[in-house]
Length: 89
Image (cartoon, rainbow, N blue to C red; front, side, top):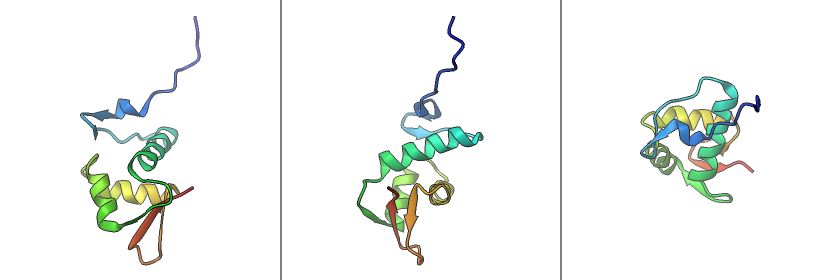
C-alpha cells in the first residue's frame, strides 16, 4: 500500500468555476495563487487595476484579497502607482 500522500489538485477548491474556500496552509495557498496567476493572466501582458479586479472577481468575491495575495506572493507585479499589473515570470 502506497503511503505517499497525493498532491491535491487546486480544482478541489472550486465549485462551478468559483473559488469556494481559501486554503490556510501556506503551501496550498501558494499552489492556488500560482494557478490563478497562470490561468487568469497572460505572460507578457499588462492589465489595469479594473481588469485585474474583474478577472479575480469572476472566481472569488473578495477580489481585493486575491489581488493583494498575488502581489505579496510575487505572482503579480505592479507599478508603484498601482495602475498597471503584469504576471511575474
